Image (cartoon, rainbow, N blue to C red; front, side, top):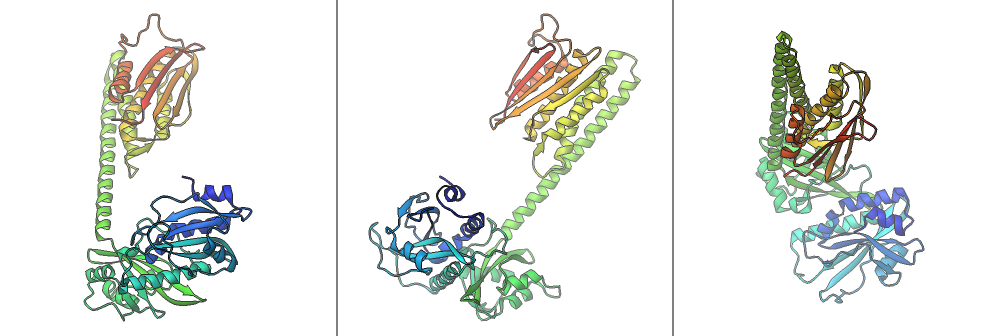
Length: 485
């Protein structure tokens, strides 16, 4: 399904500022749909204004939908939907007409012109399924009155609020709890869910008739400086969000000032009890901190092991033994680099380009020959379960290239990497003296290649190939699937 931006670019003459306004509207119009108990469709005129294209759609969570199928992308000619034409032409909300029975259920159609600054950019079609119509409760009447006020604000260009930041996915919704305030910030209606949230904060009286700002402050800030945002939100004077906390209870508030006809007539305050959500977030933060601390300690322990091996190597008089211990130090060091990186990230995922560059630098430092190692391409972000073995594989391949490919003279080792969503391709190529005669990977006695093969084939379910380079030297290619079982 095409996006709002794609449909606007394809069919209309909307400028970037108008498009941004529509994005802000659509990001927050679930509020209008829920208060209206109605489906919303956003229509924009085509370039020649001969027809309308539907660029966005929203269904209510508080009532039955009218449109079970998506209508985004549909085009209707001017004249087919008279209410849309009238709202656009006369710049007013249109509610006239009897319910439409063409779909088998009664549907009340309304249209709301969408204004930005001094011009109109679109029309909202509001369709209400009347099949379950009954005498509305006070809650439903409050919802409908609030929806009417919001619709008028859309038509006057006062909603969405340009000064309000993007609405969070976890912002309070209509069904979480709703308070309606008058111009003075007194509560005129409190939904059962909103009242329950305030009961958990410690309220024992009724909310209706109280000044929400003072009541909330008294519950949460006894003897402490009052949060300025709280008073702005709880009085309904600014379109903001805040949280209030007392003891272990956390309640989220979002204010929507109602400004109709140039004056503020009151506000809506959405209320959500987020106590359990915040508790789980704290647990996750604690868990993340613990994991990072474990990675930090593992890194320290590996560095200690590497230091002990390095000391032991210096005491050995046998060159082969010293060389074997130095190789072990490099292997331990490559694993320590991964754990050091993981100790600084909140997730089990690392930027492997930084690790690769550090492994490359480590290889260059211990090379006796004049060898330049360079990287071409990017590894990107890798999960820890892939990053650790890949770091060891890279360490071994670079060490083999430097140690066996350049026993004399100088040369270049190139680390080439490419990546897709499905796999990671790594090639380590050198322009050294090449493979020995009769080399076979399966029968090789090199410990480094055995480690690489075990990690690539056995642990990562990948493929490994060693072959002569096109222009001399040796080329080792590794292919690793990104989805590990």
